[in-house]
Image 1 (cartoon, rainbow, N blue to C red):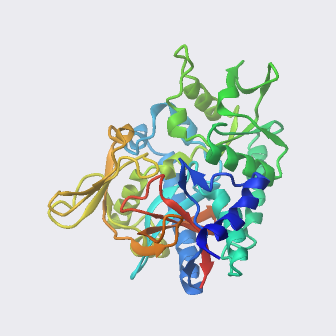
Image 2 (cartoon, rainbow, N blue to C red):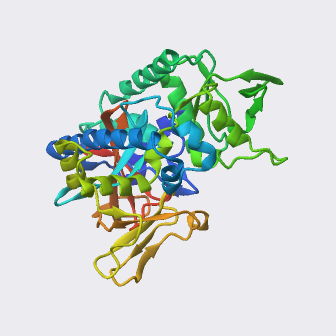
Length: 410
């Protein structure tokens, strides 16, 4: 059977079920139909790196939350979010559901970034990957891990109740016109075990100092809010009349009038500048434990607030709150641009500078024929524990047009 037929056998039922409807994005193939291999030892090492770096980021976020406003500003945290991100909802974890992006290299797994605020690829890793592997009679590295998601949501709701938050009214929100975001939010709502409803972002209102859902002409207050809407964007949200609605919502979170998932401290971990802080703490010595120091040295790349690589080695400039490869520039040691994302939205952000890490290459079957590209591996951290994995195939910069690559155990 040819690739197109195999692909349709896999994705037609998923589309029909309504769980995964974005195997095509922007008129192009997004989800590939043949899994890429990972060895059992490599998978174990990836999960060990995920767990270790989860602890490193949690410790560092904890310190930042207690730090001065100047430190938050240096990390690129919008001023409107400062009070909210100081809330230590999950004191032992940097976020509830996050995704580390790694490069597989001859010297082990190397961290590229941590998507801790509103990570994508959840449905793909936890649900779709197993279906692809089953079709090919291949071993699914993510088998059984979907159960971690409802357990995490229950733990978060319990934690908020322990802290005194009401959690009776639950809403999951995303852009309703965006197939991937809305589909992910609906999937998580269904699997979470929470008694909630999907509320499009456009139907949210601030009323009587509460976040409310506009439902059938009524405004219904929300106690616990899962939002596939980044804190960085929320901080800048305004009504049509100019009222700073996003800042008001962040104020509700800071004043414990709204529980939110992922928790607000996730924005600190999301900042790529936190990697520079982690690297600085590692170089200074004395903060991390010996095991944490070793994890940083083994799995993180040298990262700085200023460019220390010019004239020495290839490097990458990244906006601190960039997304999907936006605003990234890869440069040679002499400063010549090797590749650059042209999205101007991120160019006015502070930048961090990271030693360039070459990505593994692969040639995978697609509807357009064999496609050569670079692989980035995503490894989820759920409630502090390593979880599902998936991969993307793209160019030197992994942007929103990169393919989803299912993975199988070799």
